[in-house]
Length: 506
Image 1 (cartoon, rainbow, N blue to C red):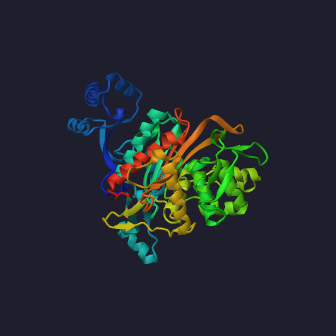
Image 2 (image 1 turned 135 degrees about the vertical axis):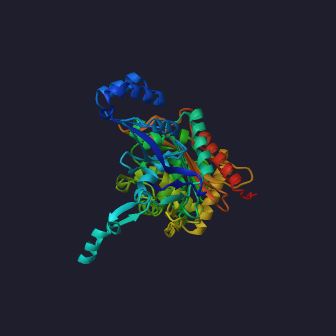
Image 3 (image 1 turned 90 degrees about the vertical axis):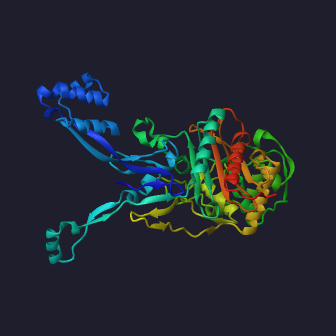
């Protein structure tokens, strides 16, 4: 037996244990005179050929078959010698490949693998263990009452923070994105900034946990949002801008003159398409995603201050989410790097992070500078029906409320006037940032024809209820995130404000 896993409504099942009828067929128990008739009856009921069954009987094999309830009843009514019927527990995932990376699966030994199944394995499966007797008399008594020597911890069930409807729509959008953009993979994370709740965590491609053994490439089981590192590109710019605003080395109206290139030793640093923007404010730097403008902010900050805020925003540590296998990079190479390394990190290249770390940081900006640890399990449900709310960690202050509000307004301008226009939701203020990041080539440098195209943001920007990260890995039919990831964000944000009936901003 194993506990069930429910979505946030506490009714819709993501994983459950059911009883499954099976048949054991032992050839040595079938007499020669009954063999032909027995095999024919088994063949008729199971729909297997008599030739196949005969071969197994001749080899003396004992074999097992999964049955339907109808097959189980028919075999039971026949009462055939050498055919043994039983019922076993079986882990099933009613929604097939829906939220598969989130839930993981249970292996043949009954142990959780990946995701929720692995992280909460002990709670879901329960335990049976011997109690230690405190005295010789107690040990002697246990011989006469052996059941009192065993303590059973019953399996516990889980209620998630994940909203079935948002998860479903997020996965639908990724499937549509694959059909249109032909990306290698994709992911969407939706989080409630004020609490850290994960409302959706969707991926493309998926797998069916009911048939995990049929997957030839085990990498498909990896939850890329927390088990895969990437260089984020321009979606990282709000983090560096937050540091500049907090340290008061720049302000939204601070001006700089963009020549389109920065020389710091090694290859020159250019803007996208090698464009020169001339005089710009910091608002314009984010609106137009100007790499050289972010280098300007980084040089105002200095190496130590930049590293301090990267640390504060959680990019050198795990988020601590309650899912199995989370990784992180300490970015030791960056810490020991040259001035050019810190310059490129200011626009998200040369630094390795996870999507979940980025989601946590963007949600902190939405939450007035307070960073919450992400989590996916809301309640533990005990066998007696009682529930226990998961204990939440205290928020961590990473930037001031004033800085968060200032930066949020700048990110609104990105959506209203800059590269994030296609993320707009009519009637609502949306804060966001696009990112088109180059992918490192293991042989050195970056691929010329491969990018990761992302969009991060939150809405409504004046009273944020949700944050969204959209990431498409190497989309073949898109040159920039403004074309593919931003519209996906807009569709999902529109769906959520309608689903939750959130009042318009304007």
